[in-house]
Length: 356
Ligand SMILES: O=C(O)C(=O)C[C@]1(C(=O)O)C=C[C@@H](O)C=C1
Image 1 (cartoon, rainbow, N blue to C red):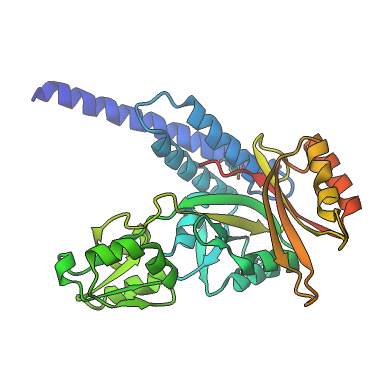
Image 2 (cartoon, helix red, strand yellow):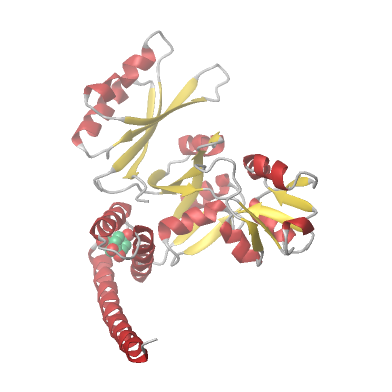
């Protein structure tokens, strides 16, 4: 080993760190001033998406895109906290995928609050006790989360962001090896998602469904004969060792979460979505006529989901996501035409498509 080169490189790293720190402090001062000048909401999802996309495109390497994104996610999170400390709620308990989604979207600076139900997340945001809520809306394997769809219809809240989270399930325990595991705790959905792996590697132990993956990890942390299936955050939180990683049967398992607030994204970010819920008159061709303006104005639909209207009359509401912001001209025109044809329409908000 060349000691003198090592020493020189470390001196260079120290000097670079000082430069980085100076620049970060300057960035913090700029953001604080932006916060004083800005009117309306301090948190600007459209601007954050643009910053993250731009940095990812500029990245010269050798750091991977994911590392650069994570670093800049944290920088903006800290800068935003200088402007306004945020309170962000998610469906708890701590250590669940909902918490991971909230942290992925907002970085680690906000105060995170774990709430017992999706309903409570909506109510606390509406009451103004919480600034932003993060709620699951659909999973690529399990399908839609019905309760979130219903609450979007009922509450006067807006969608200001979306988060895509790859769901990786791990088997974790205090036990030193798989052979020592005598029972497995997890949420019923996670047990189902790991069914093949479990029947191959732990065929003879009971699988015990519990309220959440975080609860499973908490139980496994009290019982050295037990293991839990949960996400990485739960292993860290409860001091468990991952005995087998990524044991989900479908490697593309992804959950989409929405960020809800009293406002949506004030302007377009360049790659946006708009969500709405509407109903069509109950007559032949009504659905075709309702959606026709989207084709006419060249607006792409990324989701169409029907759900009972709860009137008990076999009536349905339709949840629609389209590409673009409500202020983009084709979207604005298509929505105006759609509203004329619908018996009911509620705009749920425009927001940047998940940046990563
Ligand atoms: O551009 C702004 O509006 C800022 O407040 C700055 C900044 C950032 O750190 O880049 C911080 C918070 C906002 O959510 C968006 C961006």
